[in-house]
Image (cartoon, rainbow, N blue to C red; front, side, top):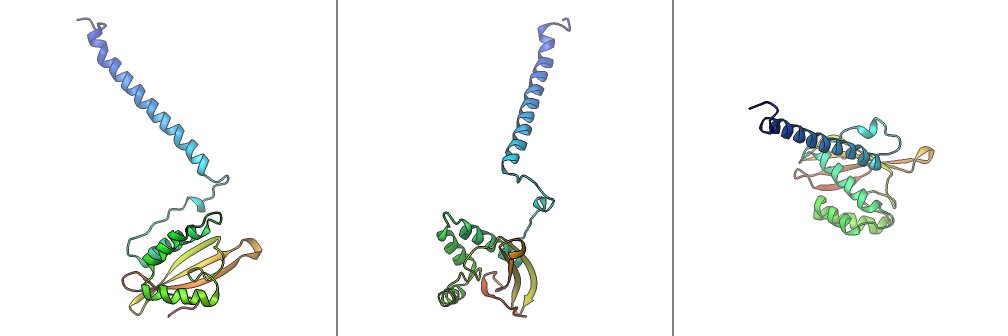
Length: 174
């Protein structure tokens, strides 16, 4: 059999076709991903926008960050705030006793007790403040507005040992 016969050329041709398909699919995916990323990426990406965010289930600071992030998202859509989600988040993350006290506080003060404000912050940070008694305290700093008019509110969030929020105050329990 000659090396140019169809029987000898087929494996090479199949390999070339398969390699071509793999390359085409790979290039197709590679060109789609930047295009998709460009749609969702801000016009000027900064190094801060590329930082990773990580957490550990059961870790107090992660739990509070998860709660505040989701709660602010639920409340922050001014066109269509998701009150049902905000209520479900409160039920999931707050102890029933604290939820009841918080509702009474809100009625007395006329503001959202989780945020201690009538509006939603533009930014927030969550910092571990270590153990307090049998619980754990986490500091939540909410930034309302921007530039020279920005106002910061620091909240001290106390979690019980089972990671449910038992208090939110403007002063530390320490």
